[in-house]
Image 1: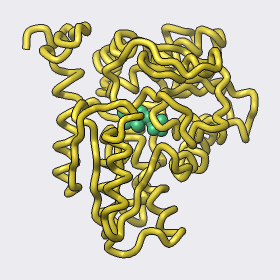
Image 2 (image 1 turned 180 degrees about the horizontal axis):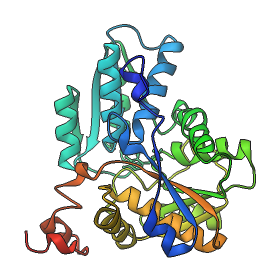
Image 3 (image 1 turned 90 degrees about the horizontal axis):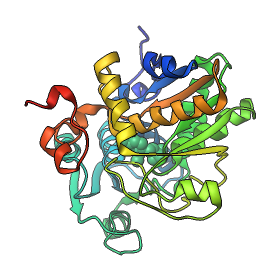
Length: 330
Ligand code: PMP
């Protein structure tokens, strides 16, 4: 096994796996980058490390300083770990609607957790605005600002995209994923296109997000809603500006959940719903491109983060979602 020089070097360089079910269903080879293998168990460790390194290089973050961020949870978990490893404090603001596991994890890691009611972005109480204000009020603090700080997507241009290109040995026809900040899709898209502009970059958008309509019709318009955490964007963030999106698919929670169920039951992968939506997007892109193609997507985080939601019968029933058969009696 590879010997790493320190704990932060464990971020990135994640394994890539061929997914048998989605590949068999389409006649394509569908591969997925296992971002749950990062130390904080999500893709967001990458952005957290790049954002903190960038703030240090710009002289904004001084020894003993504080990192403040608004997040659906995963970026906060990444930032809390990076902060610990570098001797900083972390203050994390989350909407109350996110999973209990993510909140418990943040407290366990030593972050100061602030929860706020879910609110539209236009509301000053929205978690992003609350975190910006907290950063301004806290001495020696920086605001990570993952949505509009392009150090986020640089993590994916320099890291994720290069890793995918190397792991696929340059043989890749399409890449697909959902967007929260847009850092992953924009960064991987730009990085892969720099190698081969013929690679199709596709967005898998949950209901309740505005990006599908934007890329399909040029209009930021949201319809419906989704229980997926960490994805679903209503505006063009700085990270999304200039993202080379060639195709877009709107994916329902049930479609995503069906892949979450199948990947666990058939391939032993326990994942969150954004991963299921990404795999559903990969299947849709495979059908569009035709058999024999190689398509890559992202497994964003671990399902252990959603035991009280996606893997809980009462919760699924309360949302009107299909209960996994093995949960029906417990
Ligand atoms: N899936 C999950 C579970 C996430 O937490 C996030 C980050 N918000 C994403 C996907 C989307 O990643 P990005 O912010 O790079 O668009």
